[in-house]
Image (cartoon, rainbow, N blue to C red; front, side, top):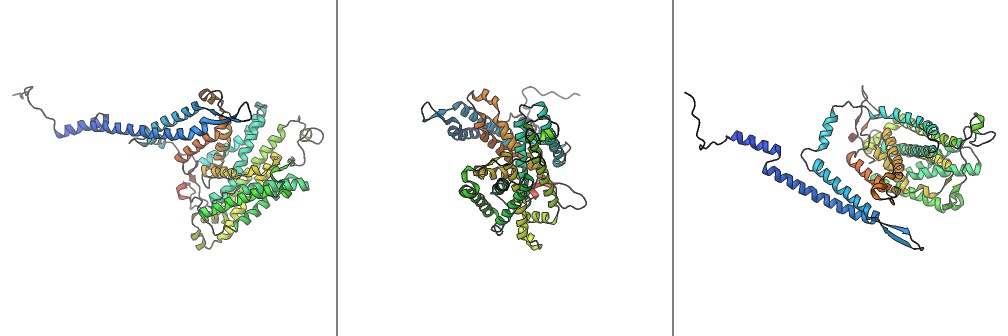
Length: 485
C-alpha cells in the first residue's frame, strides 16, 4: 500500500542537521544576518581608519606640498599654493588604505595569502646565484651599448651608473662593519672624506699619480678607522652609534675649520684626473685617442672612470668574500652574534673590532679617492650626515651581510632617485607647474616605508653561512644578528 501524502496544512519542520546546513550555506554566501552585520562593521571600521589616514596625510602634505615659497616680482618671497597635489595625495592615501583594510588587514581571507599560495609551488632559484652574473653582465655591456646607441645621453647615463657603483662600493665597505661584525656605524662618511681629502692633498701638493695616491688614501682611512676603533671598544648598541656619529661630525668640522690644510669651506679644486697607465685623455699628441688610433671624444674619460669604479667595486666584493671565509671573518660573525660567547671562545674582541673598522674604512677611503678624482673638486658639504644615512640605508635595505642585496639596494636607491627626477608624466596629474624633482625624496621615502613593511629583513632574506657541514645551504635571515655588537 503506497505511503500517504500529508496534507498541505501539516507542520513540516526541518531537522537540526538541515537547519545547520542552511546556516552554514548562508554564512558562506554572506547572507546570514550575523555575517552581514560583521561585514558592515568591518566596512565601517575600514572607512574610519582610511579617513584618519587621509586626515594625517592632509596634515603632513598641506604645509610640505601645498605651500611653497617662490620669488615674487619684488625681492620678497611669495607663498604659492598647490592644493591640487595635496588633494591627489590625500585621495591616494584614503583609497589605498581602504583597499588594504578590505582585502589584506581586516579580512579573514587576505589576498596576500592567495598570492603566496599561487607562487608557493614555483621552483625557488637562489637570488645570489642568479642575480650576480646578471648584474655583472649588465654593468659591463650597458655602457658600450649606450655610447653607440645613444651618444647624446651617454654622458648622463654612464655618470649615473658610475654614481651607483660608487655607492655599491661604499655599501660593501660598510657591510663589513655593520653586516658582518655587527658594529653599528653612523659616521662612515668620515672615512669617505678622509680618503677624498688625502687623495686631493697628496695629488695637488706632491703631483703623484692616481695609482699611487689611491692606495695611500685607503691606508690613511684605515688608520683613522683604527683610531676610531680604540674609543669604542667597550661600547655597544646605541652608545656605539652615538660615538661614530660624533666622529663623522668631528671630521666634517675639522675640514671646515682647518683652512690652512683643507682650504676650509672653499674646498679643493683642480684635482688631477686619472690616466690610462700614463696616457692622458686629451686631444693631440701623446693622448689616449691618438695612441690607439681613435677619434678624440670626451666620453673616453667618462667610460674609463665607469670601468675603473666597476673594477674597484668587484675587488671590494672579492676581498670581502674571501676574508669572510678566513678566521678573522668568522670572528667578525661570532662578534656579531654574541660578544660574550666570542670572548669565551678565546677570540680577541679588541683586535676583531679594530680589523673590522680598518677594513671597512679602507674601502671607504678608496671610494673617496675615486670621488675626488672624478669630481675634480671636493668640499666639506659633500660629506655630511645624509651621506652616512644613505649608505647605511643601502646596507639595511639590501639585507645585513648580503653582498648582492647591497648591490640591488644601491641600484634601487641611487638609480631610483635619478628616475624620479624625470617623471614628466606626473605633470598630467598634478598640473604643468609640477616639478617631480622637488618631491622625489617624498616619493622615495614612501617607497622605502613600503619596502620595510613588506620586506623588514631586506631585499634578500636569506644568507649563505661561511661554515657548513657536508652541504652548503642558505638560511633565513632571522637567524642572523642585526648590528647589536
